[in-house]
Image (cartoon, rainbow, N blue to C red; front, side, top):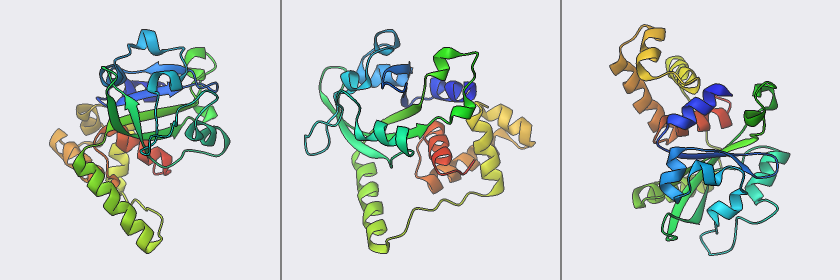
Length: 213
């Protein structure tokens, strides 16, 4: 759990965590930049009151009592990535994509009550036109073939991503695997391409959700 906090604290992506009551217990710098709420202001509040999200048709998604995503996480697991319209820093609408990761209860430490309370992390990224086109194309191919998405990482790529999930920076990953930092960065480029990810935190989240690590 501590390593996940380190990864999500240092990433440029916006990542927040909620407890079983949908109260925010983790809010990184990326969230502050994206939505304008400081961690001091956000932590302890219900996530729906901070995001005020609606689906792409304008229907309210974030609501008191929990959204579909949070209910699914608590009952059966993580939903697939989904898109929302949320309020940005100046209350202007922002189109974002949200990924989720359910925290296994076995990873929590009884000695850290604040971190114990996190049941799920959510990562938020702005949706740009290129990403939208790729997403629509991917969904079209999936619907056409009716196949589940399958990710295939090499043994070395899995090792690199596994160390990243424990908060290892590039130089420490290189030292641990006896390879150069440049080689580590090249592995990450291939990992991003295979997982359709744009950052280490996003890649780690996808890998964890799909039991790749």
